[in-house]
Length: 78
Image (cartoon, rainbow, N blue to C red; front, side, top):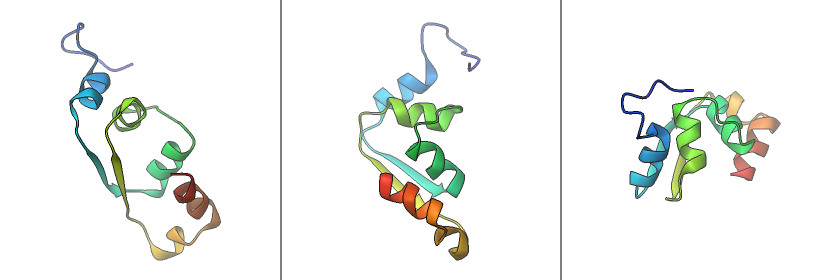
C-alpha cells in the first residue's frame, strides 16, 4: 500500500481520475512489461491501470533491448 497523507483520497485513483492524457516517458522495458501483463506494484503502474484517459507510451532503452522478442511482444500487447 501507499502511505496516504489524506486517508479520504487514494492517490493513484485521484491521479488517474484527474488526468486527461497520460504520457509515460521514458518507458523502460520493465515498465512496458508490467503494463503489458497487468502488474500494478507501484504508483506509476497502479495509476495507469486505474486510468480511463488515453495513455501514450514512449519506449526508451538500448536498441538491443528494444529488439528482444519479449519486449516486442509486450509492446504489441499495449
